[in-house]
Structure formats: structure tokens, C-alpha cells
Length: 384
Image 1 (tube, rainbow, N blue to C red):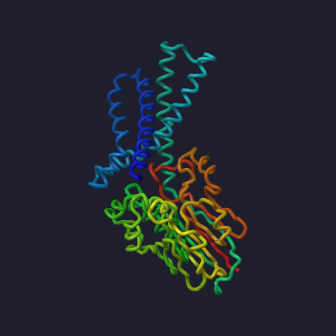
Image 2: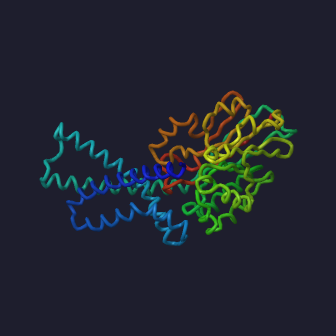
């Protein structure tokens, strides 16, 4: 039954993929009526773009190689291209429809109309490519988001705690050695007391992570109180057991519906991602996770997907760190995540509970960010 549902889901996704690409192809061919010599090259380019991502993802599971990497990168960039070329083409179609009513464009078939068509196509192509390039540069430029908060509990004499956290790193083909080193160097430069990774450390299949030996960089993370992580939905997409095993072999303590009492001062609680509920055994409820804990001590929880913030508030969680949303990653999807989540990015306080949702460090799909910048969190906590 699960396999049947998965096949339906994949069929819907592929159908949308091909329909969007057909729209771009159809409009592109119309534009190239002004430059017919380029039609064959355009058809070949579109074919490569359409099949690149699914072919690359399939190949890297059975033959991780420069071929699979190249296809993966081309297809990933094209996801951003699909979005922005579709938006730009749709905008021109609205103008064309308005012309049927108002008649403000040159008459079809005239030299003025053909020139307008030519320059419109050139302009759309230039804008689309510039947006993608700018988003790629932005995706390589993480910021440090700093938060200062107070937890009104004692922590066995400790007054302050510096947490450095990251979510949605998505280690794999796209987030490779250079960006992983950048992550580690930036985190270490902040001199954290403890490092927390709020899920989606691995981007689905762990094989590209192993092949690129990204774990060696993770081993360089330095914090006197340790490095802890929770699972995310992408760990479950790619096989949580293999991903968790790899992370733990490289210095990351993955908390899976478990907690650790740090220096007899505060608890770090790691919730399994809510996608675990699709497996044979559902994740624990928050009340079950904290039932045996000393709740007079600060409770800091990693929960990848920031749904139902009332539940940790009612359970007395002092600080929850989440990710998952990417705040849409690509404009205008941030408007959608704002509607889905009570907190799509940033900070929120509900009663005595603090919530921080990160936009994430890495990217999923296209190595492009146009809706926000990637980030690493520096959270300075004061205890009572």
C-alpha cells in the first residue's frame, strides 16, 4: 500500500515537472521563430534540462561518478530556472492577454512585432539567468543570526550558555567539501559552548557524503560540551539508520527521542523527526520524552519541523530549535511557508517557551536562495 502511494506521488511530481517544462519549451520555440537557426540547439538543451535531475539522482545511487554529479548539478540549477522562467513567461502572457482587449502592442507579423518578440525573449533569458546567478552567490554567503534570551530556571550555578546551531545542511552532492569546511570553520570561529544541529544534516542518500568524505570535516567541530543533532525528514527519505550511523562515527551525537543532561546544568532533548510516524513505530510525544527529567532544569529541544508550537509550550519546553522551512528558499515560496507555519523563520516567544526557526545553512534542490540568506545561529542564553 505504501509503495502504491509512493508511485502515485512520484507520478504527480513527474507530471508537473514535464508540464512546466513543456510550457517553457513551447514558449521558447515561439520566441525562436525570430531566430530559427537556434531551434535545434534549444530542443537538445531542453531535453537535457528535463531529464538531468531525475537521471542524476538515479545514477548516483548505482554509479556515483562525475557523470551523475554533472547531471545532478544541471538539474538542480534548472529547478530554479523552471520557477523563474515560468514566472517571467506567465507575466508576458498576461500582457499578451491584456493586448487582446486594449491593443497596445504592435500588430502581429509586422517588423515592429517581430523585434518586440526578439527583445522580449532576450530580456526574459537575461533576467532569469541573472536571478539564478544572484541566488547562487547568495546561497554561498551565510549570515550569523544572533539571539539573546533568558530562561527563568537555574542551571546548577551556570549563568550563561553559548549555543551555535545549524539546520538543513543537506550534505551531499550539492553541499560538498568546500561548503562543509566553511560551515565547520564558521561554527568554530564563534567559540560555542555546545553545537546543535536541528535535522536534515544529510540530504537523503548518504552515499555522496561517504564518497566525498565529508565526515572528516564534521570531526573538526569543536565545543567543550559536545555536538548534538536530531533527525530530519531527509534523513528518513534516504534511510535514517545509515545516515545516523555515519554521523555518529564522525563525532555527531544524534538524539533520537532521547535526552542528555549536560554537566548537571540543562537538558538537550532530540525529537525524532515527525516523518518517523510513517515507519512501523511512531515517535514519542513530548510529555513522554520529559517524563523522567528534572523539569526544574532548563529543557532545550531539537525538533526539525516546527509544527504545533502549542505542544512544547504546554509541556514546559524552554527553548526549541527547528529548521525545515528554509523560509521557502526561493522567492515567492516564503509567503507559502508563512501560511503553513506559525513561525517560518526567526524568533517567537509563547508564554515561557522560546522558539527559533532557522532558514537553514544549505539548500535542497537548486543551489540557489532568492528568498532569504542561509544562516548559522548564535544563541546566547542567560539562566536565572
